[in-house]
Every structure is written in C-alpha cells, then in structure tokens.
Length: 66
Image (cartoon, rainbow, N blue to C red):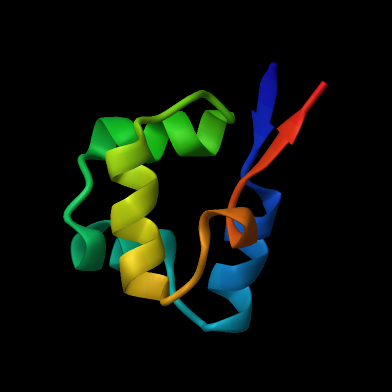
C-alpha cells in the first residue's frame, strides 16, 4: 500500500510553516523528513509528533493509496 503526504504539504502551506520549521518544531530527524518528501513510510511516532505540532489528526496529513 502506498502512502501520500499531499495533505501534509497543503496544511503546511495553509499554516505558513516551512518543512524545515516543522522538522525543528516536531523534533523529527532529517532522515524522516526525507522519507516524507519521497512519499515513503515513516513510523507512527513521527506522524504523532507532526500531528501534535500541527494540532491535527493523522487523516489530516496522510492518505493511504491502493
């Protein structure tokens, strides 16, 4: 199953938060950010940290594709 983070990138634009700022605010590694940019799977912990910073649910930042 493929994963899409298009919702995350749109949310960042809407909230005027850069990817670098998100990484710093959430404390995720640069490797995890690279995986997000490539549309690869990341851990639930990474997604939880992002949701905590953005005050959203996982469905607001990730979509699973068939």
